[in-house]
Image (cartoon, rainbow, N blue to C red):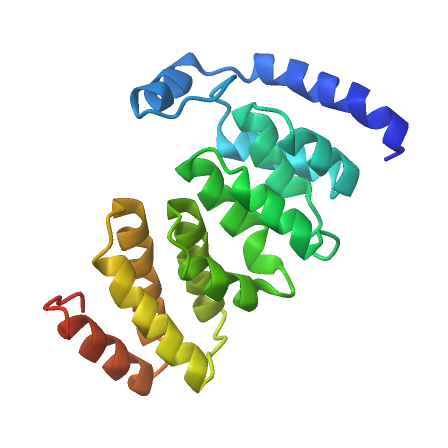
Length: 207
């Protein structure tokens, strides 16, 4: 899309969210403490449909992400081409994640498809910030599901951070770490034994 057309397209998209408005979803999110400047409560399938119609668009994704509107941020994660976003832009977006929902959406829609996804996932997993850890474990879960096996150093690093996360303060991260452990174990018998032995060392039985 022509860069000059982006602002009017963003305006048009924001107006279309009004028609998707679902007050009960928006209210339920507010009750859970998800406070966006604007939240129309549009469902993910509707946003996926919209993303399909619009197609990948770097400039539009950048502009939408800047909006403090739930639907704009989610749509941005769906429109951003994974092969065009630079690592420094990834870092900026990561710092600006406003909620667990957006962290999960960006991990599934975009981060897992980055060429440098494993490198970022290990970096985030070792962070002390909730959303970075959350994204790190979600991305690794996807990579393990796609049968991407870590090397020896990666295995050791992953197991160390897994134990830290499982004993950490964030329930969202504990849950994501646990999911990643199941997927890690599915990579093969050796991985399963390593995961079982690691979690057993902190008196946890998750298998």
